[in-house]
Image (cartoon, rainbow, N blue to C red; front, side, top):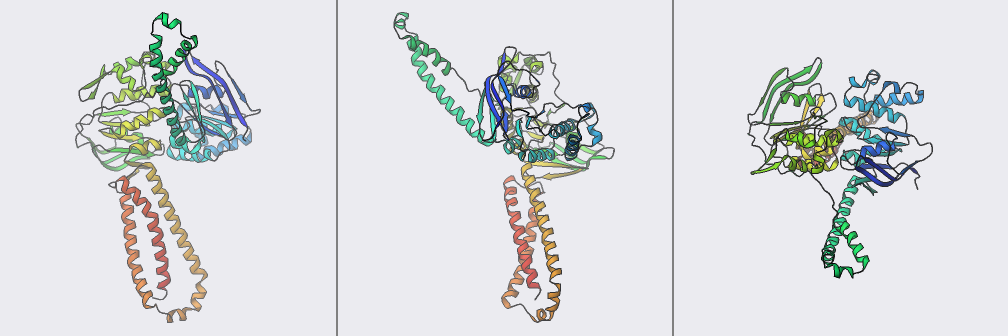
Length: 595
């Protein structure tokens, strides 16, 4: 059995009168990969900070294995060039190796943090913590500000790692593929699950169903006991004392609630016409750095578009040009008259810390039109965004990073836009909020553009994808990111197989050259039989038909008009078709010797 690296016993943390968690206990074992899940504001980051020794607790104990090396990536990460000074050569070598793998130059690594992008700071901080070769790695939102290439590299590296890992992340693919255990924090308590994220979802629902059934049974009994308690004092005084005490325990159980405070919005969409936006020959560059080059696009009504690509390829610049916040160098972007943009960005959150939550919403509107004549007050609308009445009068500076993001999302949606542009909307939002936001966006009666590195989120919401490859090279793929990735891998495999087949044929041809020369007269004398001649002719027809089908599928996959179901079928057909084509070509070559 794996030995424990860390034992947490009876840990408690309060902020003022608010209890984040109370008397929680769990263990982190050697090589164990644990994901920590909870709503924003319930103390996930605080718990990681306490374990890392950056913050104090209000009770309980933590027992670490002797000489345990702990690495901690906080959120947001901090870097200081002086931290590297004095490190030994063994550490510096590993650090430089990780910087190279994360595409950070030594010059960038030595810059002050304020001169770097969020993605550069995250990669440098990750390189430092990984170079320390910790036994226990604590990660707080490791995928925030990383592009898809870096996320997938980190995912592959950590999934094979022998380090023990305790992490908080909203990236559900990342969580599912790395973690073999889940710890859920709910109502100040801990619920452990021995399995990945998919297993956790199943077992969590079972727990909630069982708890709801128990509460329902307690309520039925409570009604009976309540009638008894309301009997006359004279009658009640003659009853057994234990029954009275049991009543109050029963009352506590009956009044429990499994709080599923979700963002459930059924907002009526604002009318949007057929003309959305048309981009014609749009060009944009920053010096030699090309963002768009003769870009043309006609955005369709109710289209849900995802934009992916490495950091620095121009994704955010593109949406800012669309919104008129960034000028383009040439070409035109014609926006429809009925379009009403709603823009959520990483830089757009600007609240006054000394302002109350309810006032930040009332500054926009006292009431929100939900469509069909229904209106919600600012307070009612906030409750849909997981802000109960008692929290609405808290000051904004008391909110966690995720709670501020949730409030920002609230202020964007309450303006009832018919064209939403969300630039990295998943950073700092908890999984519960993401699930409900996904459901809302899937049913959103308007247009949508999402710039995101969250693969799970994109797969659930968008119907096709723009891939920014850099240098103005933009690919329109008719499907989700995962479908694009599968297609890309299949395409690469086909090219590799084709090269290997060509190489093998060339080698076989060279090694058999003497045999062919020696038997040339015999081969010339050899003729195809009638059946072989028929097979040879049929092969030529089959190969032509298969090549035509292959080109048709490849064209459809990149054409932008194919449905998701058709893409799935085509993606399955393509490798089978390639294998069949290769077999027929090899047989044709064999028969052609005697044709």
